[in-house]
Length: 131
Image 1 (cartoon, rainbow, N blue to C red):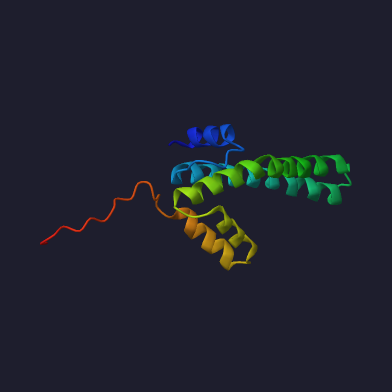
Image 2 (image 1 turned 45 degrees about the vertical axis):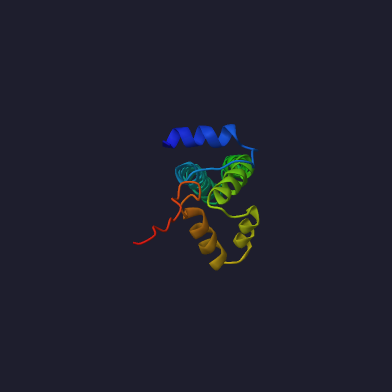
């Protein structure tokens, strides 16, 4: 799955918690979300600095802050949905998302779980008699 296909798929299935999501779908969307968030926050910092240094209107800083906040709200449900589908693809329950509540270690545990190979694509181990 390509970068743009994964973004399209995640937004098309923005509230679908059933099914599975492959690694490429999840990680391409995570990269897209991080890039957009970084760009919006990078625009926020200079606007906030201008407000204090040059006594500009507060509208410029609050506009960019609101864009960043709106973006966070827009991607919240699709991010949760694709995370649940990704966990299901690895053979885990959605309750593993609660690892995120544990500072530092929880984020690492969740990243490891989301990076695991898909359980649907693993080959079953078959014992060959006499081998």
